[in-house]
Length: 476
Image 1 (cartoon, rainbow, N blue to C red):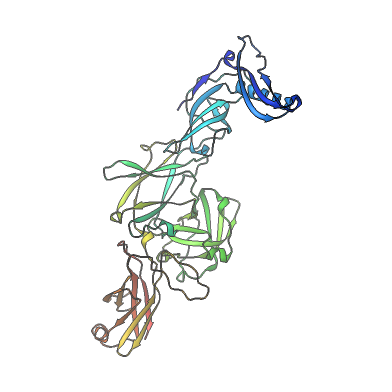
Image 2: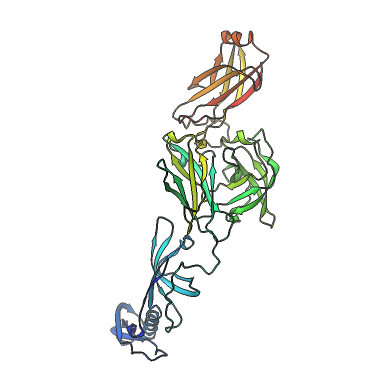
């Protein structure tokens, strides 16, 4: 990109700037005061243009003289107007800001006149050069303007997050699937953001998202062990991780109550096996590594992944400003797509594609809980408590029924031969959290009421996503 500049010759400068005002020393009559351009230190034709402004204020002559002189000097100093395109790092620039750029080896101090934000997150600006001398002219060089700091490469990473629904507001009410992701630098400094492209059915890459906040992502330095009671906080559990990208200032410890109210969510794993956790205590080790202590595991419907971790798993901070989501049609369930995270200033042709599958994890309903089986006469009555992926809250008095939050209420109940055994019988249960296992079926499956009964239950999603099942073995 180049800078297109307009240069004014000294003789084209505004020579005098006058202000009409009301002077209290002259019985509030309208009077003018003028500011004049300084003499230039080189032989040029004299500037002879004048501008006058009327300001209906009552003020003393000396103050107006200062204002007029400042104005004419500002007009003289800002005599080069130019246009340039900046990267997203300057996304907070506004008209009237004074900003420095390094271009073609020289520092340009500019006052911003106009900003235009483009769909690719670049910014077109119109500015005037703001200098301390009136004798310096702008060079005619071309190229990309840069900041005073070094500029990193635009290499970027796309983290495809198969995770449960993070916010009730993200849910599509059964009309589609939500897929989360994070865009981040590949570890280099001065990353300004990336545009996410996805290949469509015709084989063309289309823009689907963009992110200017560097995703906060780390890597686990140890294997996070399994935890089979994810409803219980592991107060002494620790996890060491090294930070790959992002602003670590947001990593702050939380009290137990703050955690229970939704603080400090993170995901650990890889695509297809992300576990969502929460952390209480966060300690910086001073070497770009951190220790998480006091973990709440298997949040929402991710408890099925607590035992699948490996050393080197990614750790992704799940704050609202760090994570984005894309909506997909229900027909996209289990479809694989090619994605390209193109860093600002990079090109799509040189960016490697990553292939990821839309799993509909945000539609998965957590496993039913409190499974029970009771012998009633010659029958066995199965009971359970449903959970929900939206609308949940903590009830202090314990009188709580999870909201349905789905387009239907349906459960699949399977009778098994034993723990982890073969499926002997399957029931579909609608609009109820109980099922009677009749004596005739018991006789067919076991001959008589067994000493123990193993069964599992999963709730059915209205979008066709297979939800996780909970298995229990009950002594009868």
